[in-house]
Image 1 (tube, rainbow, N blue to C red):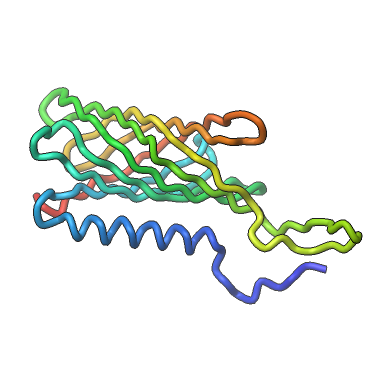
Image 2 (tube, rainbow, N blue to C red):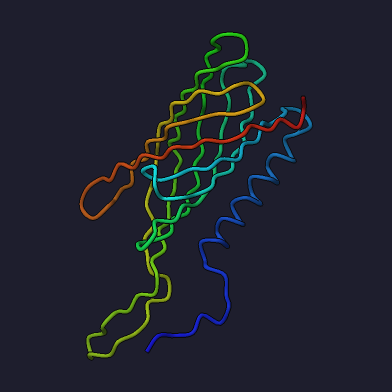
Length: 185
C-alpha cells in the first residue's frame, strides 16, 4: 500500500535550494572586490531531460582569462529519477571577435545525487519496507566547452563522468543554454 506524500517538497528541491543559497551567499561576499558573473540556464541531460542550473564565475584580476567557477542545478529524467549536482573548478575564456568568447572549463570537484521515486526493499524476514532516501551519490568531475557573448547569452556542452556507477564509469552529456548576469557592469 503506497504511503501518502503529506504535501512535502521533494528532497531534490531542498538540495537545489540549499546549493543556490550557498552560491548566492558566496557571490554576495565576493562582490565587493572580484565582481562575480552569475548565470542562469536551461541544462538538459542528454538533451531531453529538462533541468535548470545556476552558477557564478569569479574572474582572477591577475589573469583575466581565467576564472573560478561554481554551478548547482537539477534535472528530471521523466519516468526514472531526479538528479541534483554541484560542481566547482576553473574556466578559461579565449576572446574571439568583438564580444564573443570561447570557453573551456575543468571541474574536478563535482558531486551528483540521484533521487528515485518511491522505492521498496524486501527485508531478510520477508517484510516489505519503504526506502527512506532512494538513489545514490556519485563523484562527478567534468569538462565543458562553450560559446558566450559578453554580458548576454551562452551555450555550453558539459561532459560529466559519474563514478562509481555500478562497476564502471558513466559519461553524461549536458547541454546548457542560458543568460549571463554581471552585477558590476
